[in-house]
Image 1: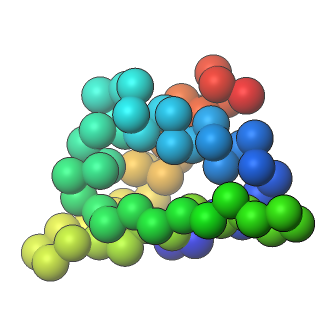
Image 2: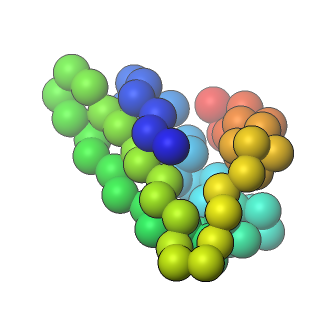
Length: 69
């Protein structure tokens, strides 16, 4: 799953991944790549072998990120 957004939103996602228990769980399930560009920033979640990134995980990540924005 790739998310493209403004820098401050991507930074909030990365902060939520570091500071919350749900974010840390997502980090265990996925490889996370990101780029903070001048015009477009993105973060990409790729499930690790044998793992699945479920829609409910994305929902809770979004719920957590709103606390950081």
